[in-house]
Length: 156
Image (cartoon, rainbow, N blue to C red; front, side):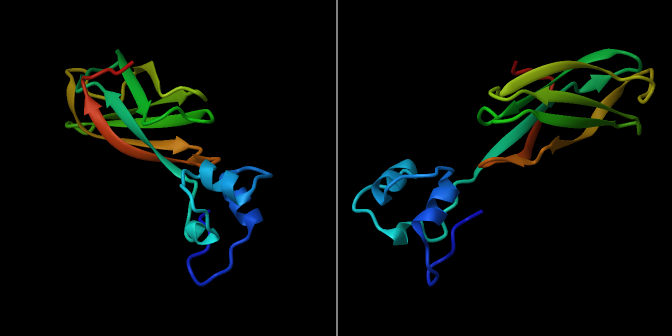
């Protein structure tokens, strides 16, 4: 959660909480936040230590029924907790299927093979749309955000 905007008071303890540390002088906290000297409490008005981590999904562009296909998720930086990504693939003929990839803590890329089952046309379908969600949506200072989807490319 961001620190208060200008016109409000800010305490060293609030800055420590935002930075996730229990001690430190103003100089140490400013350095931790990437701020240069001279140090001032006013530097921290509206400051947030939160980081947006973009999650991209990689999926096949064409599928048939009861087949195995490779999917992958890639994050813009290593995640600090296990993030379960649920992917729903929608085809141009109205079929769809769903699968999960668990992006493990400390990793930024993971792939999995997902079975389409009978949810898509057995003659095959081209993808129309892909939807994905994450759980959890945040952890510590990281906020997980669905970003881009890519067809027929595998990053890992």
